[in-house]
Image 1 (cartoon, rainbow, N blue to C red):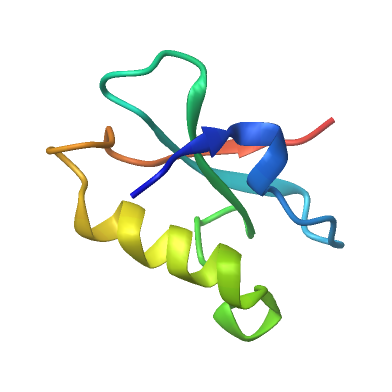
Image 2 (tube, rainbow, N blue to C red; image 1 turned 135 degrees about the horizontal axis):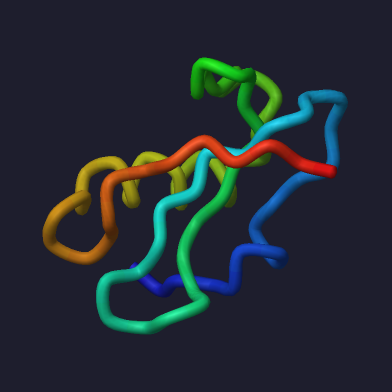
Length: 74
């Protein structure tokens, strides 16, 4: 999977948090999606590209990506 910088994969939305999967091999790169405070992602609101990146990152936790963290947005 080709990772992007966090800012390129985020999709603007009304949620005030991001679920971030940091790349284990490329600092500053990874996958980030909008979520609620508990880290729940509404997959129906994701574009197909972002949905595939999110599912790929989930599948590769521990191999390509770190465990996800919930980050509040400013």
